[in-house]
Length: 501
Image (cartoon, rainbow, N blue to C red; front, side):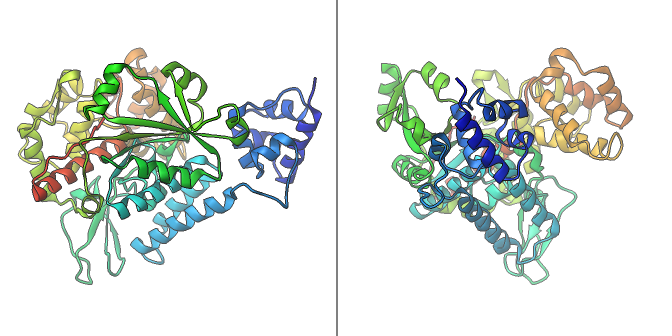
């Protein structure tokens, strides 16, 4: 039986928003044919599409399912106002750091991301993490966002949702707000100390990550938190999203040995939450759902989710870590410490770059980042980068992370093969990170294109050996964390640690 009332309602809302079937489909991630079927009453959208559809059509999910637009009695939170509040907070922070009239390139970065994130749940996650950052600062607890997507976002950095500033390397003055971009380093932390013309010492930042690396946009995030901060994280999460959806805590069934080790403080405590649309929540009464791993991934993996990892050995001071300035001297000191403590060795992966690192007289942040990429990537160092380094290729020029590979290939192809090769280069790097070229080789026409645009043969050969490379933002997050940890440890005489990968 066809449901014409539901289809007509969607059609009316679509027209009211001035959208074609194709545009509506693109915004919610389906084809125009799927939208046509909805409007003709042949089918209905899946439940995980309903929330996105309601957002795009500016209506509550309960109203959408009831085919009733309750204009005068909206109980749902105004998502548009929520998004505006998040963007306004980011803009205020940008002006606080970079002045009332930041350089056009900085303003454009924020506006580009604003357009990318419009009506996206990812923006609300950034807003939540910003609120979490503020609350954790107040309580002097610690949290760290896992993964790479947030680290590619300037808005996320402004909000406090990541410790990675994706802008190009630059100096900025905390007093007069003067800004100087630095062309001869990849990471701002590698620039020499310098004073502004007003006499105040410059701050240094920026890691050169393009906005395209925020794709694909998806909901949910994972965070590490300090010992004893679980209740604070839960409270922040519920307060922030309470008007958007209902929240369910997911307990994954563990073995008796795992439960015992958690109780002894020998394992991290992992808690999962999902955001459930209210019309779906009635199917799952109770605030806590106990599921097997199979049930969780089959039924709930597509819902917006938060995974909180509480580390019993993490007792960091957020205020102290946030106020630490990483200097060139700190980076050199960390290199010696890391070699001494065998930080560049992973026993379970049977990988050891410690001996190699011990032979370095000094290293920049960029070079330490390259070592981390070689250490954790697959096929990046062994029978690849190591040989190239011995042959004279600088460590900083090896293929060790996704974003630098993208930036390099884009610079080679831009304006030569086409006016804007961003999409093509993105696909190349995506295949590189998945190890497709290592398994099947590089297509002859692509290899010829790279050679014609002066990509060296050694670089192309290296691409053919890589099975997996990490995102740059992920590596930066934990390397910055480790260096800051080391500085803090020396100051306080405490041993601090965090699960990295």
